[in-house]
Length: 130
Image (tube, rainbow, N blue to C red; front, side, top):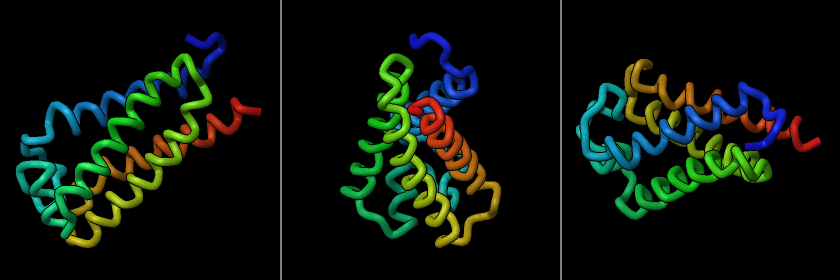
């Protein structure tokens, strides 16, 4: 690992990466209380938002890629900021999808928390690149 890495950045990278991998690899076909419109799987959630299966696959590939980049970023720090920027865009999209289907605020909470962590990683990454 990189010496002198800020502990907050380290923690956020690990939390965000494993959170994304959990949702997209382990819980993709399981219901959770945070799925849009309360559906049972990611595919049903994307359908509830009016999004196609190919869009879901693209988003999933991007989120898994972001997770892997954040984990690799523990050693290759130049990966962190671009990954966090991509995740910021994805989480904004997720939050607006919850708004689109008029979900209760509680269902939007994970996307907002992930958005906040992604923005924090962008800020921290920008500071460490200087």
